[in-house]
View 1 (cartoon, rainbow, N blue to C red):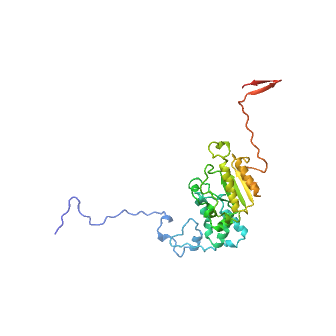
View 2 (cartoon, one colour):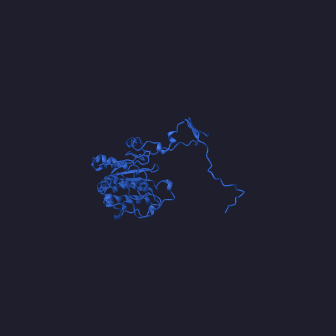
View 3 (cartoon, rainbow, N blue to C red):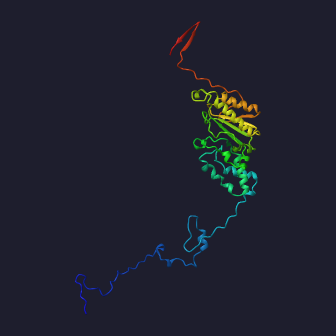
Length: 313
Protein backbone atom coordinates (compact mmCIF):
# COMPACT_ATOMS: atom_id res chain seq x y z
CA UNK A 1 0.00 0.00 0.00
CA UNK A 2 1.43 3.35 -1.01
CA UNK A 3 1.44 6.38 1.26
CA UNK A 4 0.17 9.57 -0.15
CA UNK A 5 2.56 12.41 -0.44
CA UNK A 6 1.59 15.66 1.26
CA UNK A 7 1.94 18.30 -1.42
CA UNK A 8 2.51 21.04 1.15
CA UNK A 9 5.52 19.44 2.79
CA UNK A 10 7.03 17.99 -0.29
CA UNK A 11 8.83 14.66 -0.56
CA UNK A 12 10.67 13.33 2.46
CA UNK A 13 14.46 13.56 2.25
CA UNK A 14 16.08 10.18 1.96
CA UNK A 15 19.74 11.01 2.50
CA UNK A 16 21.23 13.00 5.47
CA UNK A 17 22.00 16.65 4.92
CA UNK A 18 25.73 17.22 4.81
CA UNK A 19 27.24 20.01 7.00
CA UNK A 20 29.79 22.63 6.06
CA UNK A 21 33.19 21.45 5.00
CA UNK A 22 35.83 22.07 7.77
CA UNK A 23 38.64 24.41 6.86
CA UNK A 24 42.12 23.60 8.08
CA UNK A 25 43.98 26.22 10.07
CA UNK A 26 47.58 26.68 11.07
CA UNK A 27 46.67 28.45 14.40
CA UNK A 28 47.02 26.48 17.60
CA UNK A 29 44.16 26.13 20.02
CA UNK A 30 44.69 28.21 23.20
CA UNK A 31 45.10 26.24 26.39
CA UNK A 32 42.26 28.02 28.17
CA UNK A 33 39.70 26.74 25.72
CA UNK A 34 41.14 23.24 25.38
CA UNK A 35 39.33 20.17 26.63
CA UNK A 36 40.11 18.56 29.88
CA UNK A 37 42.09 15.85 28.13
CA UNK A 38 44.71 18.41 27.15
CA UNK A 39 45.65 19.24 30.81
CA UNK A 40 48.46 17.58 32.63
CA UNK A 41 47.67 14.16 34.02
CA UNK A 42 47.34 13.46 37.70
CA UNK A 43 50.81 11.97 37.68
CA UNK A 44 52.31 15.24 36.43
CA UNK A 45 50.34 17.47 38.90
CA UNK A 46 52.34 18.50 42.01
CA UNK A 47 49.83 18.61 44.86
CA UNK A 48 52.21 20.02 47.49
CA UNK A 49 53.30 22.80 45.17
CA UNK A 50 49.71 23.78 44.43
CA UNK A 51 48.75 23.81 48.11
CA UNK A 52 51.70 26.01 48.95
CA UNK A 53 50.70 28.57 46.32
CA UNK A 54 47.20 28.99 47.73
CA UNK A 55 46.26 32.13 49.63
CA UNK A 56 43.72 32.50 52.43
CA UNK A 57 41.04 33.74 50.04
CA UNK A 58 41.54 30.99 47.46
CA UNK A 59 40.01 27.54 47.51
CA UNK A 60 41.94 24.39 46.55
CA UNK A 61 41.36 22.88 43.08
CA UNK A 62 38.73 20.25 42.54
CA UNK A 63 39.67 16.90 43.93
CA UNK A 64 42.23 18.32 46.43
CA UNK A 65 41.40 18.54 50.13
CA UNK A 66 42.80 21.41 52.15
CA UNK A 67 45.15 20.54 54.98
CA UNK A 68 43.63 20.87 58.42
CA UNK A 69 45.44 23.18 60.79
CA UNK A 70 46.79 21.63 63.95
CA UNK A 71 44.75 22.40 67.11
CA UNK A 72 46.35 25.24 69.05
CA UNK A 73 47.36 24.72 72.65
CA UNK A 74 45.35 26.92 75.08
CA UNK A 75 47.33 29.82 76.52
CA UNK A 76 48.18 29.23 80.21
CA UNK A 77 46.66 32.50 81.45
CA UNK A 78 46.63 31.50 85.11
CA UNK A 79 50.38 30.83 84.95
CA UNK A 80 51.02 34.55 84.43
CA UNK A 81 52.07 36.67 87.42
CA UNK A 82 49.20 38.34 89.26
CA UNK A 83 50.40 41.80 88.16
CA UNK A 84 49.97 40.86 84.50
CA UNK A 85 46.60 39.27 85.11
CA UNK A 86 45.38 42.48 86.74
CA UNK A 87 46.47 44.47 83.68
CA UNK A 88 44.51 42.10 81.47
CA UNK A 89 41.42 42.58 83.65
CA UNK A 90 41.85 46.36 83.49
CA UNK A 91 42.00 46.23 79.69
CA UNK A 92 38.99 43.91 79.55
CA UNK A 93 36.75 46.06 81.77
CA UNK A 94 37.73 49.34 80.12
CA UNK A 95 34.72 51.31 78.92
CA UNK A 96 32.28 50.03 81.55
CA UNK A 97 31.88 53.47 83.13
CA UNK A 98 33.04 54.99 86.39
CA UNK A 99 30.13 54.67 88.83
CA UNK A 100 27.89 51.60 88.78
CA UNK A 101 24.15 52.14 88.99
CA UNK A 102 20.93 50.60 87.68
CA UNK A 103 21.15 52.07 84.18
CA UNK A 104 19.23 50.69 81.19
CA UNK A 105 22.42 50.49 79.10
CA UNK A 106 24.19 48.19 81.56
CA UNK A 107 23.53 45.29 79.20
CA UNK A 108 25.56 46.95 76.44
CA UNK A 109 28.38 48.29 78.62
CA UNK A 110 28.75 45.77 81.45
CA UNK A 111 26.77 42.57 81.06
CA UNK A 112 28.72 41.26 78.07
CA UNK A 113 32.03 42.00 79.82
CA UNK A 114 30.98 39.95 82.84
CA UNK A 115 30.93 36.79 80.71
CA UNK A 116 34.56 36.30 81.70
CA UNK A 117 33.36 35.34 85.18
CA UNK A 118 32.00 32.06 83.78
CA UNK A 119 35.45 30.79 82.78
CA UNK A 120 36.44 29.06 86.01
CA UNK A 121 36.35 29.55 89.75
CA UNK A 122 39.78 31.17 89.92
CA UNK A 123 39.01 33.75 87.24
CA UNK A 124 35.61 34.38 88.82
CA UNK A 125 37.22 35.29 92.14
CA UNK A 126 39.96 37.43 90.60
CA UNK A 127 37.94 39.24 87.92
CA UNK A 128 34.94 39.78 90.18
CA UNK A 129 37.05 41.25 92.96
CA UNK A 130 38.89 43.52 90.51
CA UNK A 131 35.67 44.75 88.89
CA UNK A 132 33.81 45.64 92.09
CA UNK A 133 36.86 47.02 93.88
CA UNK A 134 37.70 49.48 91.09
CA UNK A 135 34.17 50.81 90.43
CA UNK A 136 32.31 52.97 92.98
CA UNK A 137 28.77 51.78 93.67
CA UNK A 138 25.93 54.30 93.95
CA UNK A 139 24.07 53.81 97.23
CA UNK A 140 20.66 54.92 95.90
CA UNK A 141 19.74 54.80 92.23
CA UNK A 142 19.32 58.23 90.66
CA UNK A 143 18.34 57.21 87.15
CA UNK A 144 15.10 58.95 86.15
CA UNK A 145 12.09 56.80 85.42
CA UNK A 146 11.14 53.45 86.83
CA UNK A 147 14.29 53.04 88.96
CA UNK A 148 13.18 55.83 91.28
CA UNK A 149 9.95 53.98 91.97
CA UNK A 150 11.48 50.71 93.13
CA UNK A 151 12.65 49.84 96.60
CA UNK A 152 15.65 47.77 95.48
CA UNK A 153 18.98 49.29 94.52
CA UNK A 154 22.16 47.88 93.05
CA UNK A 155 23.63 47.15 96.49
CA UNK A 156 20.50 45.20 97.39
CA UNK A 157 20.77 43.04 94.27
CA UNK A 158 24.46 42.25 94.76
CA UNK A 159 25.74 39.13 96.49
CA UNK A 160 27.48 39.34 99.88
CA UNK A 161 30.84 38.43 98.33
CA UNK A 162 30.48 41.19 95.76
CA UNK A 163 29.56 43.76 98.42
CA UNK A 164 32.62 42.72 100.40
CA UNK A 165 34.84 43.64 97.43
CA UNK A 166 33.48 47.19 97.09
CA UNK A 167 35.97 49.85 98.21
CA UNK A 168 34.08 53.07 97.35
CA UNK A 169 30.46 54.26 97.48
CA UNK A 170 28.74 57.35 96.11
CA UNK A 171 25.77 59.22 97.54
CA UNK A 172 23.98 61.62 95.19
CA UNK A 173 22.00 64.44 96.77
CA UNK A 174 19.63 66.68 94.86
CA UNK A 175 17.23 64.33 93.05
CA UNK A 176 13.82 64.54 94.70
CA UNK A 177 14.68 67.72 96.62
CA UNK A 178 10.97 68.50 97.06
CA UNK A 179 9.88 64.88 97.67
CA UNK A 180 12.63 62.25 98.10
CA UNK A 181 11.99 58.81 96.54
CA UNK A 182 10.38 56.20 98.76
CA UNK A 183 13.28 53.78 98.44
CA UNK A 184 15.87 56.21 99.85
CA UNK A 185 15.98 54.58 103.27
CA UNK A 186 18.86 52.96 105.09
CA UNK A 187 17.71 49.43 105.92
CA UNK A 188 19.51 46.15 106.68
CA UNK A 189 18.44 44.84 103.25
CA UNK A 190 20.64 47.50 101.64
CA UNK A 191 23.68 45.52 102.76
CA UNK A 192 25.87 48.40 103.94
CA UNK A 193 27.06 46.37 106.93
CA UNK A 194 28.58 43.86 104.49
CA UNK A 195 30.62 46.50 102.63
CA UNK A 196 33.56 45.97 104.98
CA UNK A 197 36.21 47.07 102.46
CA UNK A 198 34.77 50.54 101.85
CA UNK A 199 37.19 53.28 102.89
CA UNK A 200 35.83 56.20 100.87
CA UNK A 201 32.37 57.73 100.56
CA UNK A 202 31.75 60.33 97.86
CA UNK A 203 28.93 62.82 98.42
CA UNK A 204 27.98 64.55 95.18
CA UNK A 205 25.47 67.42 95.48
CA UNK A 206 23.60 68.12 92.27
CA UNK A 207 21.61 71.11 93.55
CA UNK A 208 21.05 73.06 96.74
CA UNK A 209 17.34 73.85 97.31
CA UNK A 210 18.36 76.50 99.84
CA UNK A 211 19.47 78.89 97.10
CA UNK A 212 17.26 81.74 95.98
CA UNK A 213 16.60 80.01 92.68
CA UNK A 214 14.28 77.48 94.41
CA UNK A 215 12.43 80.09 96.46
CA UNK A 216 8.70 79.50 96.19
CA UNK A 217 9.11 75.82 95.18
CA UNK A 218 11.04 74.27 98.07
CA UNK A 219 9.57 72.98 101.29
CA UNK A 220 9.99 75.46 104.15
CA UNK A 221 12.07 75.08 107.28
CA UNK A 222 15.17 73.55 105.69
CA UNK A 223 13.43 70.24 104.92
CA UNK A 224 15.95 68.90 102.42
CA UNK A 225 18.94 70.03 104.48
CA UNK A 226 17.69 67.98 107.45
CA UNK A 227 16.87 65.00 105.23
CA UNK A 228 20.34 64.96 103.62
CA UNK A 229 22.14 65.30 106.94
CA UNK A 230 20.08 62.50 108.48
CA UNK A 231 20.66 60.24 105.47
CA UNK A 232 24.43 60.72 105.58
CA UNK A 233 24.50 60.06 109.32
CA UNK A 234 22.58 56.78 108.95
CA UNK A 235 24.97 55.59 106.24
CA UNK A 236 27.99 56.34 108.42
CA UNK A 237 26.35 54.52 111.35
CA UNK A 238 26.16 51.35 109.23
CA UNK A 239 29.82 51.68 108.19
CA UNK A 240 31.88 53.07 111.08
CA UNK A 241 35.08 51.90 109.35
CA UNK A 242 34.86 54.54 106.59
CA UNK A 243 37.93 56.78 106.76
CA UNK A 244 37.35 59.53 104.21
CA UNK A 245 34.51 61.56 102.70
CA UNK A 246 34.91 63.33 99.38
CA UNK A 247 32.60 66.23 98.62
CA UNK A 248 31.86 67.30 95.08
CA UNK A 249 29.08 69.23 93.36
CA UNK A 250 27.91 71.03 90.25
CA UNK A 251 29.03 74.58 89.65
CA UNK A 252 25.81 76.13 91.04
CA UNK A 253 26.30 74.64 94.53
CA UNK A 254 28.08 76.78 97.10
CA UNK A 255 30.15 75.43 99.95
CA UNK A 256 28.85 78.23 102.14
CA UNK A 257 25.23 77.16 101.61
CA UNK A 258 23.10 75.62 104.34
CA UNK A 259 23.18 72.14 102.77
CA UNK A 260 26.97 71.90 102.43
CA UNK A 261 27.61 73.47 105.82
CA UNK A 262 25.41 70.85 107.50
CA UNK A 263 27.14 67.96 105.72
CA UNK A 264 30.63 69.27 106.50
CA UNK A 265 29.77 69.82 110.17
CA UNK A 266 28.46 66.26 110.47
CA UNK A 267 31.62 64.81 108.92
CA UNK A 268 33.89 66.93 111.11
CA UNK A 269 32.05 65.93 114.29
CA UNK A 270 32.63 62.25 113.47
CA UNK A 271 36.36 62.78 112.89
CA UNK A 272 36.20 62.02 109.17
CA UNK A 273 38.97 63.04 106.81
CA UNK A 274 37.51 65.40 104.19
CA UNK A 275 38.72 65.70 100.61
CA UNK A 276 37.38 67.52 97.56
CA UNK A 277 36.43 66.24 94.12
CA UNK A 278 37.68 67.51 90.79
CA UNK A 279 34.31 68.55 89.33
CA UNK A 280 33.71 71.56 91.60
CA UNK A 281 37.34 72.31 92.37
CA UNK A 282 36.90 73.09 96.07
CA UNK A 283 39.87 73.29 98.43
CA UNK A 284 40.37 73.59 102.17
CA UNK A 285 40.46 77.36 101.78
CA UNK A 286 37.39 79.49 102.10
CA UNK A 287 35.21 79.71 99.04
CA UNK A 288 35.73 82.92 97.07
CA UNK A 289 32.46 84.48 96.08
CA UNK A 290 32.44 85.66 92.47
CA UNK A 291 32.18 89.43 92.08
CA UNK A 292 29.14 90.76 90.30
CA UNK A 293 29.82 92.35 86.90
CA UNK A 294 29.53 96.14 86.81
CA UNK A 295 26.26 97.67 85.67
CA UNK A 296 27.05 99.51 82.47
CA UNK A 297 23.65 101.27 82.51
CA UNK A 298 24.19 102.94 85.92
CA UNK A 299 24.65 106.75 85.93
CA UNK A 300 28.22 107.97 86.09
CA UNK A 301 29.07 110.29 89.01
CA UNK A 302 31.97 112.71 88.69
CA UNK A 303 33.39 114.36 91.82
CA UNK A 304 34.12 118.05 91.31
CA UNK A 305 35.23 119.52 94.61
CA UNK A 306 32.51 119.05 97.19
CA UNK A 307 29.72 118.77 94.67
CA UNK A 308 28.78 115.67 92.75
CA UNK A 309 27.82 116.09 89.14
CA UNK A 310 25.64 113.33 87.77
CA UNK A 311 26.24 112.47 84.18
CA UNK A 312 23.62 110.32 82.54
CA UNK A 313 24.76 108.42 79.48
